[in-house]
Image 1: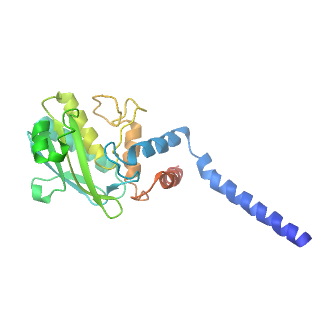
Image 2: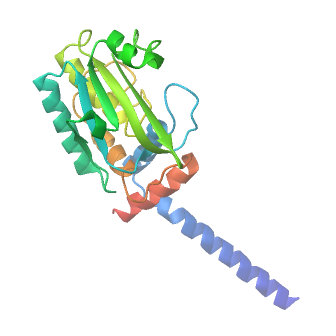
Image 3: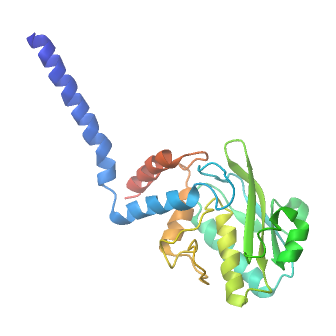
Length: 235
């Protein structure tokens, strides 16, 4: 009887030890870390339109962008600035670049009117009336993004709004596809804004999605576990 009692006590002690070890990483997170995890799950799982599964998606190879329509120097320069920022935030080898040959591209940016964009992509016809910017992406295998397109309406949107829409839609095309009301300064803010810079939390979301340990096809529970480990390891 004593032998069995000793075994039970050892087993309970083992369970208690495991439980404490499991909880330890979460206790090491700062309040800001927890905000990042919560915001990542709100932004990076699923899409605003359609009923795609709420899992992580990202580009595994470089994004090669071709720009068409009425390309101004201001927007071309802004696109280059956005690309540099995103490339610096990426940690898993992902890069984006503008190419001059559409045949070499896997992502198309159209700058012009919504009507012209809908002529090229008829599936967007129902969305252009209420959206001055839109994006669409396609994926394969384990939710790896492989192609896409977007537009910025340069007639209805003023110069600053154009830059905002270019940054917002392109960033969401990375796999950060949802809007939120949480942070007014965020590029993912659901209310209309004209911000042309990433908030700190935006940069962290991009960096964490394009971290080597972040995989595609992860649900909310799996994402929280991966993000916790990444953030703890960075301390």
